[in-house]
Image (tube, rainbow, N blue to C red):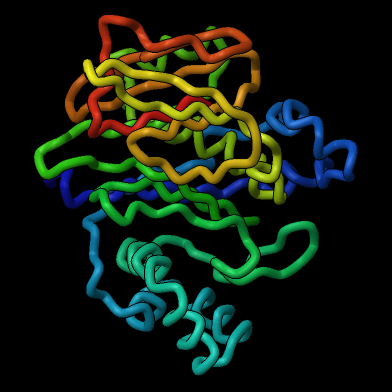
Length: 285
C-alpha cells in the first residue's frame, strides 16, 4: 500500500485504574511530570494502517461500528441532531469514517472529569492534516487526541513527529530493529493521552520556537513563550520540556529516523550538517 494513501490511526485503550488516582485538583494540574509518571502499558496501544477514505458517508461509517457503539451513539443524540453536528464538523467526519472502515472499537461517549462528552464538542480538539496525506490520530477512552504527520509537496516523503523520552530510551527509537514510526507514535500517544485524556495539556504554556529560513536557506530560530496550538506548519516548532530531555525526529519512509536534536533542559539548535528542508515539519516536544 502506498504511503500516500495510508493513515496511521492510533487507538488507545487505557484501563480505568490508570486515571483513578490522578483526577487533578488545581495544584496537581501544575505538576505535569506527576501525570507522566502514571503507568501505561504499551500493549494497550494498537496501530492500524488504513486507506484514506473520504467519500464514505458518516452514517454508513456508524453502521459499520459495533452494534453496541451505534446504540450508545443513538442514545446520546437523536439522528437529526447528530446529522446537524456532523455537517458542522466535516473534517471530523473523515476520522469517523476511518474508524468505521477499520471496524475499530470507537466510543462516541466518553467521560472527562466525570462529565459525559461527545466527540468533537468538549473533548480536546483533534488535529487532522488538511494538506497532507498521512496523519496520526490518537484516541483514549476518556478523550480524543490528535497530532499531524504531514506531507509537504507533491513528491516529498518526509514526515515529522516528535517524542519526548528518557535519555536511555531515545536510541531505541532510532534503531533499525524497531518498528520505528510505530514505536515513536505509541510513545507519543501514551504521553499525550495521559495529559489530555483528563483535560491536561495545551492549556499550559508551551515554549514555541518559530523556525524560519534565511536568504541562504539556513534555519533561523526565534523562541517565544506563551500558549500555542499544536497545529504544525513548516515553520512552527512546538517545544514542551518534560523528563529533562527533548528528542526531535524526522521520519522518512523506509529509512531510519534521524535525530535532529537531543538536549537537556533547553532546545539545542539543529546539527549544522542537517539543514531542514522547507517542506518538512518538525516537532520538539
